[in-house]
Image (cartoon, rainbow, N blue to C red):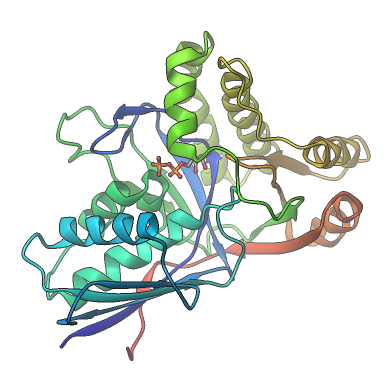
Length: 321
Ligand code: DP6
């Protein structure tokens, strides 16, 4: 029996991935850029040579749908693999637009590759994690990570690239959890629906490279205002495609908008804070370390809970299983 445990942090996209150029291989229609965030993490253990496949999530047996997503991924890691036991847990809320699938598939790619006795480069691990969930390819690295769209049909040129490590820029992402409910439409279904039905989707794809270039330059220059503006541009353009789908896909709740307005009021008062939302109602607010408490106080009245996150490090294997 072999056993390996890996830990990975979630990432929040500063420039969003929304839309696929290849659904089976999970290749994106647009490039994206993210910040890997600590202290939130997923910890996953894979043990080989079990009597049969067994998947445990957050200490309970996985549902059939969850288990088959995991075991199909293990088949990609090694098509000739023995049965495995997978045990995975997050220390943060799952499935509410908080990027839980990103850290989950990054940790699983790393732990399963090790337990099944394979050797893969980080870029290969990233391309593998992408097959589980697109955004997972960015969680192999800490700090700021770019995911290129790539042009190859086999996807070999579409994986994460570290842009700047976690020590490059000590920013904060203040998270407003405004709902605990599971999201109504999973991101995969949401992006396919948007691509099929929104008249704005073509404009979203056409504008993505320029937004990415702007945000990446801002990261390298440590220019928060420039980064914040590019991030909001990406967020609101992506949500505009969702809102103009048929039928409309609206992930926002009233509290989501209340937080966005609170962030705009902070900016009018001279505090550098910018908001981003994903496939769920939660809001993440980007700001300097010294403004994080002010931001948290301003958005807390609209949220069930808030959390302050900072740059996280690379996904890594734990010394003991
Ligand atoms: C809005 O990576 O969850 O969070 O590849 O279909 O599993 P699949 O989608 P997923 O989508 C994330 C979408 C997003 C933006 C982002 O993280 O870039």
